[in-house]
Amino acid sequence: MTYFLQFLVFVIALLVAMTVHEASHALIAYYLGDPTAKIRGRLTLNPIAHLDPVGSLLFLITQRVGWGKPVPVNSMNFKNPVKDSALTSLAGPVSNFILAFVLAIPMKYLGAYLPDFVNLLLWTIFHVSIYLGIFNLLPFPPLDGSGILGLFIPKRFYPQYQNFLQNGVKYFIAIILIDVFIIDSIFKFSFLHYFMGFMHDWVSTVLLLGT
Image (cartoon, rainbow, N blue to C red):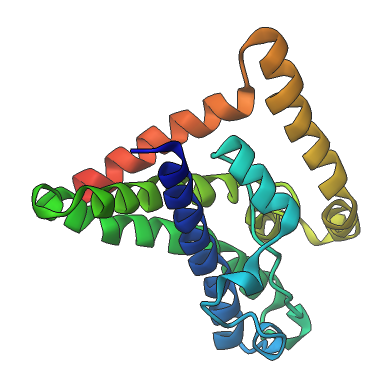
């Protein structure tokens, strides 16, 4: 199989996993009372609406880490802003793991009867979806883990937490670039790649055993 076809399969897998991820944020937010994402056209399975230039490019380069365009949420529309914001954040990674689990069933039981291209596409979506779900659980903005983190922050530290959400993105991106491109090129080791690889292997094993 040519490199171009493999790259095309990866791009399709990335679009599928990212679209499911971001649309799930919008769906849960709408269900919990916030129509902001729906009004702004994010409650859709159109992948173009969910692409983030930096996050998508990083995923294409590393094939392990990246993110979609953050879904707009107005927590003031929630009955319980802290809890519902965390549930909205959690919806993205959970949807990725559900997608991977659903795909694991035909891969495991029908893989021998499917065309090679279909098998490759299903496996690629499976792995990309797991990587996307794991990476977005990290507790740093703009990732979903930073929103989930709000559940565990005492009220007296909420101003500092909000400051972290607003200003932490640039530092997180800098850490990723240093780890993936500088440390890895010098020492041939990336902390992020090691962590992502370890967690991916564990989650994929659990999902496949669960089928």
